[in-house]
Image (cartoon, rainbow, N blue to C red; front, side, top):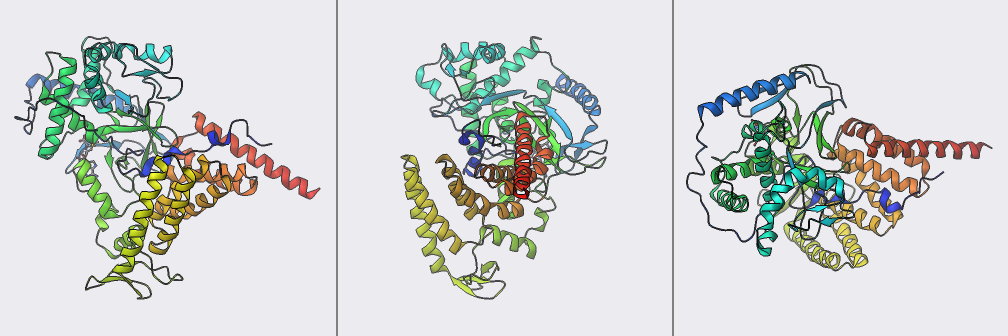
Length: 545
Ligand SMILES: C[S@@+](CC[C@H](N)C(=O)[O-])C[C@H]1O[C@@H](n2cnc3c(N)ncnc32)[C@H](O)[C@@H]1O
């Protein structure tokens, strides 16, 4: 009773392994603003100073805040302000694990299209696409999506169609998100799209921009991008300075929209969910159902507690997380994990995740630099490893990585796999078995082997990653649930029903909290678990007979 109705490759997640891309848009990560090409003159004057506050603007902001509070009140939530963090979202009731805290439609969103990948403007699918025949920038899967987007695209299409071919090529998703933001504002002002308590331009105005904290280089980039937006729209009532500030808002407030398996699809602005602050030990998780953002509790959240999600990959050393948060979100995290920076436990954890292993294969210790910086000493057995030996292995890994990347680029999968296997071998000698780098290589192999439908080998590498996932993502983390799911699907496919039941059960235990149970993704998982259970009991009863 196998469920092999569709091809196995469809049944197994792959692209979420993209999360290790050096430029993440990964899951809860915020959007990365892509640099536009070939831009016109800059206008930096006064960009550092805040926009002139007007009295009427302040009054209407206060009114908008009151409406927001009443909208949130119905959900058992409230907005407050805390020193050092700014606004924050608090609960006014107990929230149970798995409960939806808030869900929000995108105020504006765009697919992350590039020169090599396109998605439908409406539903983000990459199948059966047709280009807009007027602007040649936007794609649709059919007339339904085209119709639903038309009220926005009407204006955008008109503006984009006037650009020459070269300039159209410089239209990045970030530029399009900004165009759509101004179009949405216009539609709201003209009452074509009604503003509501939980969805209006005032909420965008209230977002943090950090304009006075960002460096000159970044400002220049935002000014260039703002110029381009201004040039495209040519509307008299928008200021370059305000557009630049909105780009800065995107950088610390926009979210990467992902599918259920956390594969990035697009970028969206969710002004209410953007009130939620960060913790490296979050009590909630943000997932997407289509273009809607959904925040679910992953633990019990008592009344009057702050709702917290993670903006960054939590499976990183404290130093790495702090650096990323500072660079991208401009704050120093003081969450319960980050305040431990420099303490012995934290040093041990960082050295395990990102450092080297003991030379003695039987030893589980972690290594720290010796006092004269000539090498590293195992903190458990005292054995030392020289810098030269480490450098030698690291340089072998580097040249193999170059080779693997070249093979991948030229679609020589077998060559790439063989190079990655060699890398994995060397990394096992170099890094601790909980190392993130080693896990990334195994993820890479898992993904490539699944593409080649080598299920046995894929399962081998998948199983190796599970203990690392369990350590890196304690509690209820969607990535842990998804890894169990991949493992369960491979086991089921290979006829290892007993283990498939265990892995799929583990997946359900995590994912029902992070993803709920109503989506087609979850219904599919629950169905697979039922089928695996039925097959396992059938096998058992056949053995008894
Ligand atoms: C998406 S906004 C969150 C809402 C924001 N506090 C506000 O007032 O609108 C992200 C910004 O909030 C602040 N923030 C978020 N989490 C924080 C934390 N744990 N500690 C300090 N500041 C934080 C930082 O300024 C960050 O750039």
